[in-house]
Length: 391
Ligand SMILES: Cc1ncc(COP(=O)(O)O)c(C=O)c1O
Image 1 (cartoon, rainbow, N blue to C red):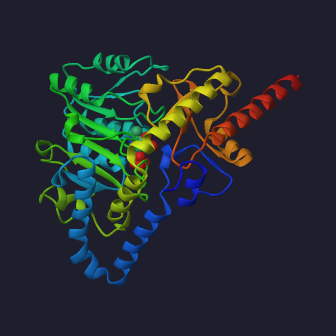
Image 2 (image 1 turned 120 degrees about the horizontal axis):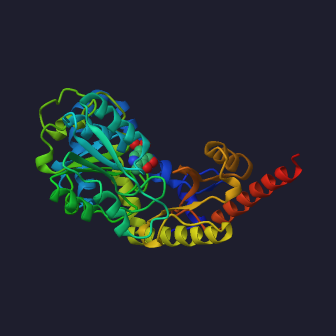
Image 3 (image 1 turned 45 degrees about the horizontal axis):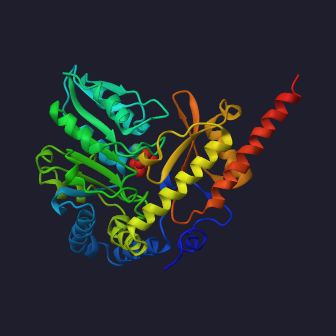
């Protein structure tokens, strides 16, 4: 078996010389999964008619079944979608809201999801209510309380991140779903980062809809996400694009939304095989230790806080940037890290402050994070130098 860290890079296409500390944003797929997706693509192009009419329907359900079993779910309750954005859109735009209804989310909700909620609110007269998540978070209880305090008589839907995008904080989905049920509120979970990063048993969470990405932490090729719906929550659920299967049930509606490249969905089986070869608990353990130990070291060097307790994280964590880098443009800072230092790290603006969000994946090693420290020190020195030299 390939050792984790440097030797693992061989199994991916990552460009040599770059420290890739941002698996969280888009993920990167191993060579063997991309090769499997390519085989499906070639098979399709060798006879598109036979493939799309005769082979695809069965192959797609077979792949959905394998993914569903990995998530402890039933094949009939799970469909592929392009990504979590698509899954969230399917649910939000299938629901009917009335003027005055409230959709509860948090201040850490992913912006594309917030925009979709705004769109739905704009059309229905419903209202977005955001539970403020204040950093650093001190415990699971404070995350719970922040949301619990916002349930009201008009709350119809809770949109909950399983793992928050700006920080990597893992939300207590099961407990919050129980609270939501007590208030008669339905729950949509945005699990964009969860599959692969945490051990998932979706039906046991007690939520109505769960969407997730396989192309982030499950090693799938890009464009591979899924949407799971509790049996009773499948009625009236439609994909964002309506096609031939309209009104014929979940699989018929979602499996065909027009001609497209199905290869990343079909190759999910190979992504699962890769993950199993590496051993899921070993991957999660390695990533968690690497990201949390590196984050602690960075936070000590910068004299700034971590986003919350280590126990609330999987493979991502955020550290507040030092004061001298606070007033920078986050995109420009990311570009400079890449161009000058060959480091890919996410810089997140959260509640008026900048945080560095780091990820750990099996191809990372402690040296990658040391490079981030060195790069940040160079920027801090150049800022101080500029200030001292300015009139
Ligand atoms: C919490 C969350 N939701 C949704 C998304 C969107 O994922 P995608 O672009 O694959 O739809 C992201 C992306 O990072 C995310 O962090």
